[in-house]
Length: 245
Image (cartoon, rainbow, N blue to C red; front, side, top):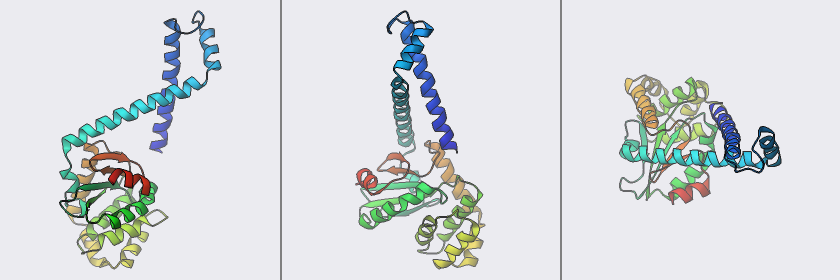
């Protein structure tokens, strides 16, 4: 909903700016005729493509500005916090030449759509890439419960990835029922899991990961940071191979 509203506002803003610029051009004598209201209206009706072209140009400029701002924030924060095991699940060699960080929500369809590419990339690049998976539960209470469970699952060796993958492969909303059913399927000790979910360090980890995301301007999922460059949105094989190598 928020993404759609943002896009609508952006589109309207681009259209308004386009009209304003045409009026300004007319006022400066850059359009044919005397630049009166009727003349401007006729010109816009004769050249409707100007609206979309100018809107697209504005959007491109806004995206470029956002990219530059994100890069500056990343440079200021540095990459070390994105591999802090207090809140990130980290796998791969410490001296890896390449890095892939993902901020995700288990109820995000685009996060789920990115899983096949990530699995393939991890299988192929286990020796040269360090991966970090960071909880960013922004889609409601069920997402927070799922985040608490996966963070707690790390207290049971070798269970985190199994639970992570099981949840990402679900097609329905991750409710507590689905969450605990998947946890049981992958072999977690359910009594221990439920107890560990209540520990204060779990809340602290979620708060820390959300604060980290906001510190570099991340407000949606999935967001990847690949070799130090932010990439918002889903990835497929071609995109991930191009960005991560």
